[in-house]
Length: 198
Image (cartoon, rainbow, N blue to C red; front, side, top):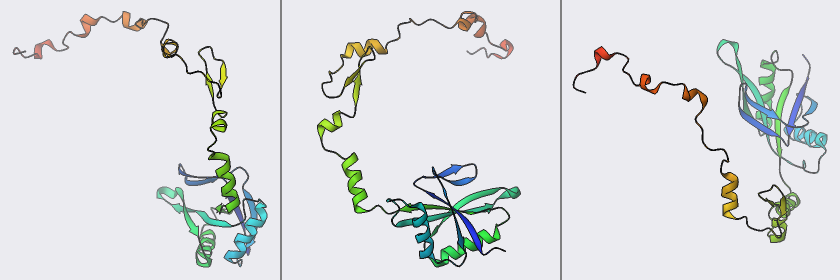
């Protein structure tokens, strides 16, 4: 038995909960890392951060791993558990060893703490109080389909909007309705059973 294991690390992605296989991790470029079973929890976090090599990946906030559960008829569903310390990491390794016939690697989803600088950048980008900047981010589309920039936009006339929304073709009954015999449709199917009181 090998003393190493392959990790597939998902980051800056998503955790899909309602899939046919249970929980699923997705991201643009998952990372493959080979580690020994003797690695410490802190060393694991360090290796992941080093391999991702991103300014945003300075400090790991949380790690989730995906593991299989046998359900009826040999069917497998995946669930997740947090890896928070040495004990939970060893539990992850032992679950992998138990299910080695079904798993080629351990799947981890990693979230990173945002530094103060990253949070400030996000606030500046998306929480601007500048009215001019806000208006430059949208445009009105006129009735003829021409885009009008947000700065000097003219409010559309209500009658123009109503006319554009109204259907120009008058209502016409579908052809299949013209061939229905409405009189025949209302004739009782079992006239013998109709009560005389009605």
